[in-house]
Amino acid sequence: MPDAIELLKTRRSVKPREMTGPGPSPAELETILTIGARVPDHGKLAPWRFIIFEGDARERAGEVIAKVFARKNPGAPAADIETERKRLTDAPLVIGIVSFTKPHPKVPAWEQELSAGASAMNIVTAATALGYGACWLTGWFSFDRDVLDGLGLKADEKLAGFIHVGKPTKPSEDRPRPFLSEIVTRF
Image (cartoon, rainbow, N blue to C red; front, side, top):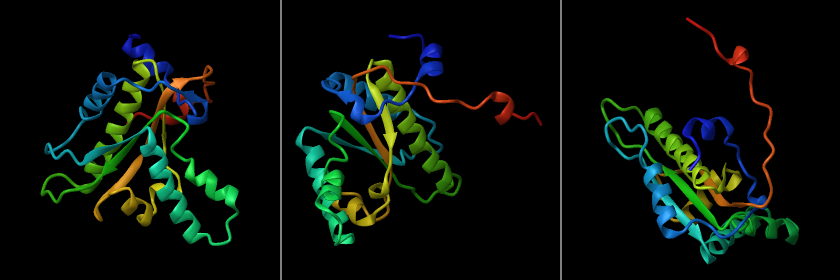
């Protein structure tokens, strides 16, 4: 288990196409999801839930995405439809982060949505700490109501994104990060 500060300083996303199996064991997945549920949550509302896509569930979700894409893009080439069908198949595990808000006199919707984002980041960090590559992605299908309905989301639910998890096939290159002098001010 890496040192927590070093892990946070060096964490980087791994492209799903640069992942392979095996994915997390059931015990590791339980750990990842437990950490995902351990985030700031004003009002103890738990305004998020998780959808697990493993094995053929990734292909079934891809069928939903491909069918919606084909219907909305009737002239799309078969290759483009196939690309959409394979959206969730690179990594052995994909976790959908579902966000929803509950009316509350002291907890605005924005705070609840931020809690879902914190949950997603905790999942990425937990997977990384366990030695997996992780990548938090969205895409057009994350915001398409027909796709969300097909994946079983309720009308008042949104998708904060899909977190792809697997073993990295190669070292991940870091990207340029902002200099603190460019993003920090003092009041």
